[in-house]
Image (cartoon, rainbow, N blue to C red; front, side):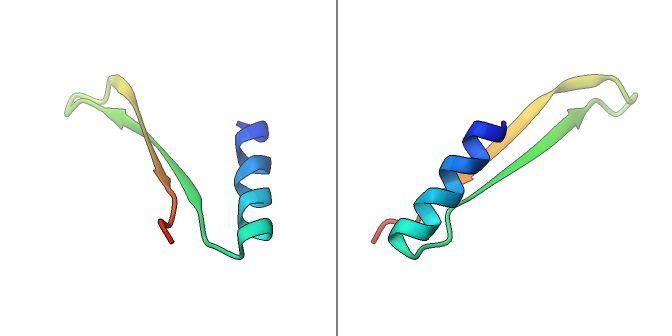
Length: 45
């Protein structure tokens, strides 16, 4: 994750953009782990 965060930061600096990454742990209604959702946002300009 640290490498990915560094790369996102470099993209933002080089291209003067606002790329981002968001990580969310998912759980069932009973509270058991159900996976991870990762959202990567890259502006397309």
